[in-house]
Image (cartoon, rainbow, N blue to C red; front, side, top):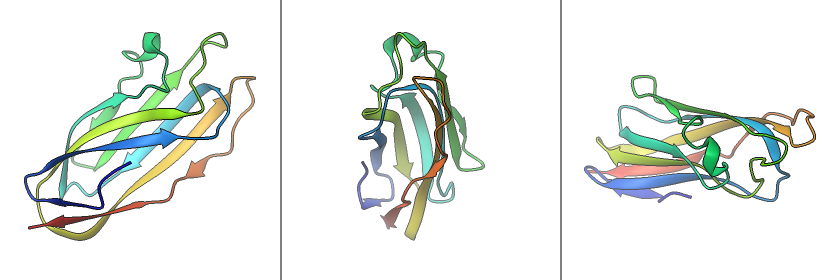
Length: 130
């Protein structure tokens, strides 16, 4: 979930949502954005990640590369939900951009322990207005 456009200086959130999936024992997600137009001010695990894993699953931000990564491993008794927010990102628009993309790659392990096929999500196009 994200806005389609923002103005330079505007703060906004992007939430990476999981929907219709099975519970997972482990998950890895990598999101890329244009660091020339966007500043990632903070990132946190969403409500799909069990509360007791939130601190251990703190996303790693590389602002210079325009990348954030999340890795979380859960117990079989308290898996990562297949529905809900996986990653919540707080951005600030810093420079005009006619249509930069925010893209995501995702991989996981099912609650039963089997690997899930890696997925490239549909990129989000975001216009940053002057």
